[in-house]
Image: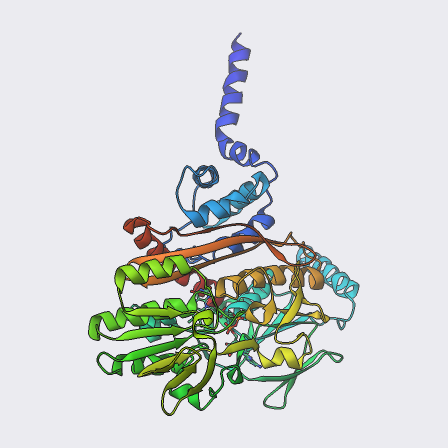
Length: 106
Length: 421
Ligand SMILES: Cc1cc2nc3c(=O)[nH]c(=O)nc-3n(C[C@H](O)[C@H](O)[C@H](O)COP(=O)(O)OP(=O)(O)OC[C@H]3O[C@@H](n4cnc5c(N)ncnc54)[C@H](O)[C@@H]3O)c2cc1C
């Protein structure tokens, strides 16, 4: 019994400390190079130096936050004609690649 | 120490193998890309090739001017929404941040066989791949009576610079209750909504300081970009001030006279107190010189932006036939990224991704009244095909219009930093 709970504890610790790892693992098909390439499309409008005037800053965005927002534009829950159009042609691979790349940007 | 040496040795060996596997590149030398034109297409291409290749490609940008004044937002300068200095940019960031070799000269000719660009100074530069993004030249002769001399009395202001400042002076100095005549260009031309945004900004000036002034648009076309939106805005903000006369109605501009400021059409002869005439356009001369044009514009391979006439030359922006994309700064920037990825792939073997193109054009109709039109595109064998798009709606809420204007300010800051920093 005792060894079982220790095992469980070890497993839990492993799981928690690797939450980040787990989060990145969910990014099916993510490729940071592809993400960097796709990011070129974002910075035509979203200032790459992080200036958020008129258009929100996206550098340094949390992975989960980015994905939630993009999906909200994709389903047209969130308004903005440009972003709905951008999100429309981003598939899972593109969204995850962008998320991975963005998470690596300072 | 031995470990270090070993690593260095391995690295060198790998680099040598890559260099050897690339044909036409001299042993040990870096592959060379020359970009002609440091505008929306060329500056973006130079930056992305240099940035993404991380030193593996030698990039030279040949640009005549040391400072680039954007045509985008030059209309906002006419309407007093921007200072002229705020739309000027230098090439410092490209040189310092990305190692682009800046050559401030005119490219005079291209020797396709020898893969050389000849410069005004008599020097020449060799390339493995050449990018041409020279923007437009004006076909003065397309408007009977218009010329390079007449441009100071009826500025086209279609290539930015002092022409825009001259036009603003003439608008501000126009006599009270006078008539301003605008002659937009025929299709295809740089920035389809541009002439109508210009009219909006001039009307905005007149509303403040010359409210009885009139604006007559003598259009060589029968319809124009964002027409419903502009017409609605003019009615709302400048009632009775602007008259748009289509080609069908005036029957064609037969002749203009810059000395008497007269515009002769079948319908009537219009007398102007100030005017702007934007003639028909063609690709910048260097594209013709390189032999990559077919008539006025340059046919390209949609998936890569390579010239159909020469696979070692890429043509970007206004000079290219990138239909269905409009000739805009946004389009040129988007095309530049596709070309940069393709060039890098062919010179260093890096991954070439499926090309993706996009464009959005914002226009300002009046204070806090912004409108926009945009589309996504993909490459097919024949063209750059529109896959989806949107346009602002008439009768939109004023908060949305204000947000659209603010978005355009964000876009300007985004694209210019993307091009130059
Ligand atoms: C009034 C107006 C408003 C506009 N508004 C917008 C807008 O809101 N949004 C938008 O997206 N677009 C807008 N545009 C369009 C936009 O300016 C152009 O589509 C864009 O600049 C095209 O980029 P390009 O690289 O093809 O050419 P350009 O940006 O014109 O760059 C060409 C460069 O090449 C240089 N050059 C040419 N030949 C040579 C040579 N032989 N040697 C050396 N250098 C050379 C020139 O000096 C120039 O700097 C507007 C245009 C106008 C006129």
